[in-house]
Length: 153
Image 1 (spheres, rainbow, N blue to C red):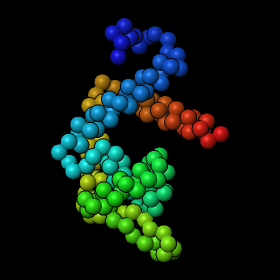
Image 2: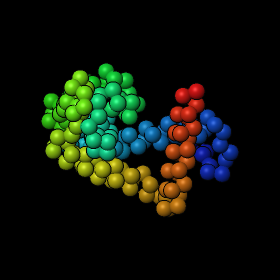
Image 3: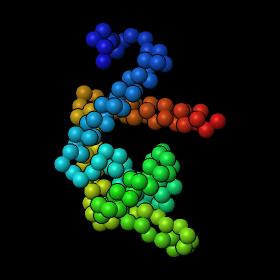
Image 4: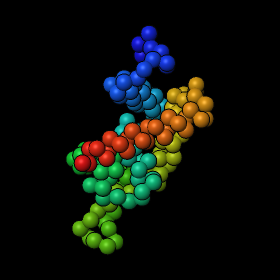
């Protein structure tokens, strides 16, 4: 952050996106620090969180949910399968479809991930009031939604 930064200074579009990028970078670093000591690598925690929320997903759908390419999701889930965190399961409705789901160990670590994000979040938001947190969350989701809508046009 610039030493001459002021919260009252006008913020043009570039200023906001630059601040978002730095906030995202700092939040990734905070999460990575909290993940130290777990058996997870950065990025795998998102797979665990999404599978805990969605249940079994085909790799292509998981890739879409994570906003990564299918080969990336495939490689990640293969590593996680080797570590005993996820398993492949055949679809009950289509034998050609294979889903990825959490193992018991994966479920346990997914709950640890929630604790990791809680701790990192407390650090990141320590100086914000509950109302400021609500506003920031809503604005970030609004920006995300706007950018995703523009990207789909």
